[in-house]
Length: 319
Image (tube, rainbow, N blue to C red):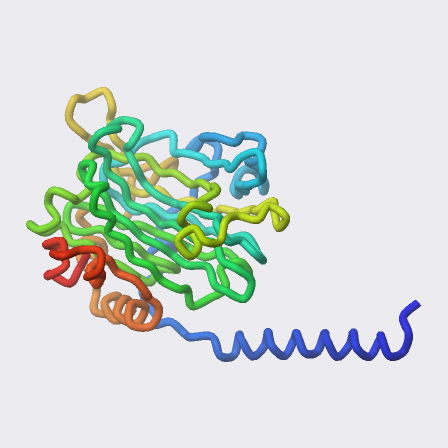
């Protein structure tokens, strides 16, 4: 039985934790309001749209297939992949990240065609990089086109919320005009399909992937903080899957597509040529400027120690 002193210490500790939590919520940055594109498309159920990729024993499906958890432990990471490849569209998932110490852990939501084009693949990445105690998860975005992996186009951000406390939406717009990375519908990065980016712009059909894996060699402080499995297993949860765009017809030699909302048929909105998707609105531009000015802590276009001559798209300001 607890003594009176122990009870008082417990109560004081609880009150202190609550006060800190309330203070963090009260002082949390309030992002600008932007159009909620993810509310305008139907959600998909995992089965039928995705399949297990690896680590099957570490993949758990719940809520009648509308939610899936990926686990990393000493034996394996895990991941899943879309059943179809896509040639342009709007793609999204809500993700909740592992809590507590997670240095070295990488949770990824991305599009790639490396299996179909191993020597000249395209890729667009959301990579969420684990943290030490009292440190924050970092978001890394990257773009590769036609095997341009020799030039990593990384940009890194801190987040303006706790990504372990609840689900948050990570979305991609990809069409012939631009690529936009969005977090909770707020643009964080735009890559224009410009002359400077033409050779490095993703131009072939890609599948959607989500994975959790051991990135000890590089993910946290350049590999100085590897995964510590004493804090595992590490679990990332996914739901609210959204696939709206151009499913590649693999029977044709050239990419062709049927514009539809995944399992729900034809789209009411057009993420490939629709006005809301080919150009950022003034509201979205302001939102992106807010994120980049306050939370971006690395851009390859500012890394003069890495590039003696910056990649040509860096002069354009949208990369």
